[in-house]
Image (tube, rainbow, N blue to C red; front, side):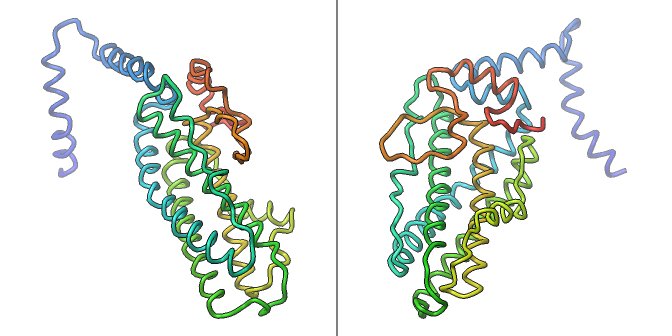
Length: 290
């Protein structure tokens, strides 16, 4: 009874709208016409967004987009607190590891491209920022994993507290990003996931962290866990950027790009990019499931 009341309450405005339509009007055709005009309007300013709407529809894009925007504070936290303050400043100093130059990883230049709307420019800035953090973090953790020394040699109260605090905060932030992607973004857009077991298999192939014993077994496990999350995060960003901002960066000396950058289109090929996204969904070799 209660369910019927709710259903009829929701349907009442639509029923009224149908009765108000002039005779001979095909509602389905009218809705399709409005939808197509909306896509054409969006496509003039944001061909990337329009291409994705044509493929999966607006109802799938909205929850995925909201989830992406909600993750912005977590990327900022990873950048400012975990990467810059704890790892790149304190831990590098304590362990004698070379700092990463973030300007070579966080590359923001595609927003200057003409033909994109303000939202399109923002998405390109976001992708460049998030990918730069991920790549820089991966490089830094790899450098830390190569630090040699027996357990307890450089282990003291301050280094231990700093390292495990950084490891905890980094893992927590990345885990939230991974969870949001797996539950909302990948589900809505049909993107591919990378499991933690697959990430550990990749690390085992290269023997990542096998010699890292300075902070004991706990330090070794936490380092590998963070690196596994980095690999999962790299997959997430590859899937998202290949769909939402697959445009090549400007060539710059010293710049380090993500591996998937090689699949991106040139900056002058926006029309071709719209065709690829509307037909295939991504420039990635791993196309969306739907």
